[in-house]
Length: 455
Image (cartoon, rainbow, N blue to C red; front, top):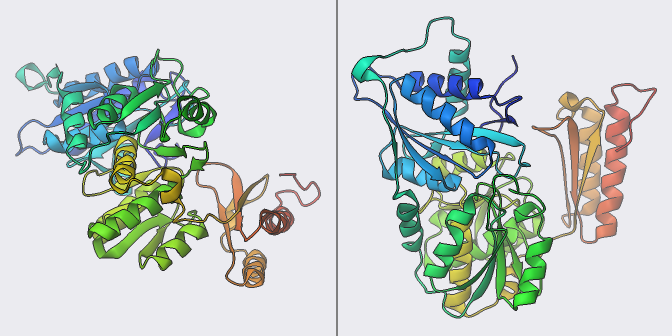
């Protein structure tokens, strides 16, 4: 079978691809990976977002863990970063989050976290998959050796207290709109921002198991923009289904993306001496405007492959304190081991309150260059990274941009496409270069040279 684990756990259509049988088997395999005969019985914490399918998948996960001799602590509906935090705070051996993040409601997923609340390494995921195919019978304790299952009624309170402890300035005087995506943020975000002193207007904050991410949250900002204007709010923040992402809207309704948010936080942490080695970690997809802004501010930038797991790996390796993605995954390692949308909103709002500056003013630190992304389908993406002709084309286009723009051509890790991303001083220039390169990709990498596909 192909590799089950993607860039962020195992995902699929719930009850078709991600079945309760698979959820149980994955949990037993993860438990077998933890087993040490010389150690006490392992403990796992389990959380989920509000999707209807999360109910039976949580039951399957918990059954698998307990049947393999692991004590399971059921946290209920909580954000992914809350599960990560509680994995460490409760000294658990394993964390499990049941969520498909920003995906539509019919999908679901399972993420595993190691001790301390860190995402699994690729090697650990490979070991779990290998155990699924292991012909040896799984560990089957009996009697007093089976795992026990307990709820943690204080889970939300512990996480809320943790977040409030990160705020150094009250949010008094700020009216904020929060789009909770009818997801896991509903359990936490309005309470946290309100307790920190803000006047909170919450939208899409009444989950019913079916409406998560449906026309709302960080992938659909229209309702948030309208609500910010309607309520005369200072800003709005939108989360995805498991609340590990955050995007923002300023008082005028303009979108403030992950790059701009990182620019705001990086300069703030640089000013206060909390930006380790004056370094920000981002992916190659971050806008050139962010890189230029950080250079002006005397802040170093390290770039990684696309995916927050690669940002996290680079941050851990270098001991850095801030990193993230344009999509709104922002990691502040002083307080969190994963991207944390509620923490991000809290810190941006605290910066607004402390400086008495609007979000629009703060976000001006980053002047985003127009960016065009073209997904080229029906081509041989495996050859995109080392095709001599295409590499020469990219080099020529970048030379023509003369430092005022950037080109990135890469095969997607999640879709059968080659992505062509171009940044330039004007939208027209970016579109012109992107379409020219996309046509070269169609020609050079066509699966059938006699039937060239369209974009």
